[in-house]
Image (cartoon, rainbow, N blue to C red):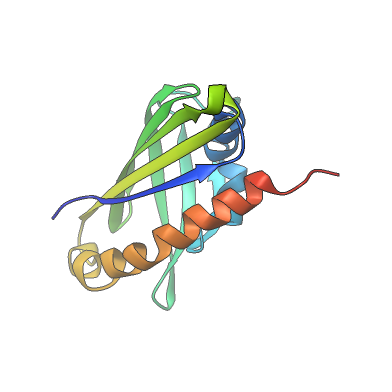
Length: 149
């Protein structure tokens, strides 16, 4: 199966978008299935950083660990799941628009199932993410464009 891909334009600079997206503490703010995200390493996110993400999949809360593979600020990032029954592989890109005043955000995600996850990926996870990713990107846009006080 092919990766699930969504694109949205955001009225913030690539630097602002990148900083927000790659900060694990923001994950539950803009991803509907994310219940919590806890960095497993000290300091700023870097290639090799791991994050424990608890997601609601169907009626269950399932913890999984993801690792950042590549970070190219402020343009792209890659991460993959390293444990848990459902392991995502995510690629994100941020393209500057209007001389860097705005950004086009593209997120591509695919999944690998292990154990129970082999059944969950096609039956629950992929259908849920197909519905959720467009809403997640809309939430991302709203969070980033919200006026600061």
